Length: 424
Image 1 (tube, rainbow, N blue to C red):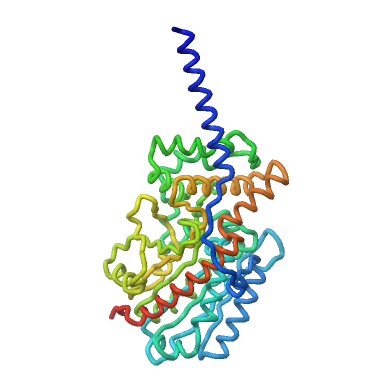
Image 2: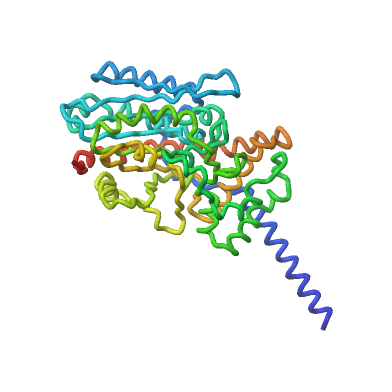
C-alpha cells in the first residue's frame, strides 16, 4: 500500500514538472497574432524607426504648413543629452485658429514614451499631411487651433527606451504640484523582488526562466487587478526601478510648461490626444481614458468620440496612473475646460494574463540591462530587440492597421469636434 502511494506521488510530481516545462516553453515562444492586412506601401512609408529621420520629416511638413497658413509658430525645446553628442529636441508646431474666433484647441503629442515614438510620429505626420489642409482649417475647423508636440521624450526615441536619460517615465512625472513626487505606491514593495532584479540581465537565469510561474503565483495570492495597479501606477522612491516618476519635473516639461500655458489659455476648450503603443489587444486602437471627476469633461469626451468605444477605466484589465502627461496639459490651464484623451495601439494582447506577464517580463529584462548591464552580447541583442518589438512592432500587418485605424478615427473625431460644447 505504501509503495502504491509513493508511485502515485511520483507520478503527480512528474506530471507537475512536465506541465511546468510545457508552460515555460509556451511562455518563451509567446507571440500575439496580427490581423492580416493587404499590402500598403504608402501606409508603411509613414514609419521611420530612428529619431533623426522622423524629426527631419516632421520639420519638413511643419515648414509646408507654415507657408500655407497664417501666424504659424514653431517650438523647439532642447533636451540635454549626456550620453553622446546627438542633439535632442522636443519639436512643436502651433497653428492658431485661422478664423476670427479662438474657441477650441486640439493638441496631439507623440513620444512621451520614447520607444513608442516611431508609431506616434508616423500617426502625427499622417495627421499633418491628410487632415491639416488649408480647406479644412479655414472651413469647418476655422475656430480651432492645432498644437503638435513631436517626440516629447527624444532621448527615449533616439536610444529605444521608454524612459528619459534619468530613467524617468514622463507619463508618471507630469504635474504642476510637487507633492506628486512624494506619492507612495503602497503595492510596489510587494512586486519589487519580481520586477527589479539585481545583477546583469541574463535571460537564462532561473528567475527569468520561471518568471511567468512566479507571476502566476503572485496573481493567485493577490489577484491580477491589484498586481497590475501596483506595477503600472508609478513609483517615486526607487530611481533604478521600472515606472519611476522622478523626484522633480523633468527638464523638457519644465521648459514646455511656460510655452504651452498661454496657448492653452487662449481657447476656452482644449483637447489633447496623446499617442501611445503597448497596452491592449494586438493591432487595436484603444481609447483609454481615466474616469474624469468632472461630468462636463466626460460629456465633452463622449461628444468628441461619439460612435467610438471608450474604455473609462472600469474594467478589471484597466489601471490608473499618477503624473500622466495628458492630464498635466489640463493642469497648465488657468481656466476653461480640458479633455485629456489617449490613443493606445495594442501590441502584446496585454489585456490578457499571458500577454500582460510577457510584457512585464520584457520590461523587467530591459530595465535590468539598462541599470546593471547584460550577461552577454547575445542577451543584450535579444532583450533590446524584444523591447523594440513590444512598443514598435516591425510587422507590416500591424503597421498598416495602425495607419488605417488612425485615418478612420481622425476622420470621425474631426467631424464631431465642431459640435463639442465650449465652456463660457
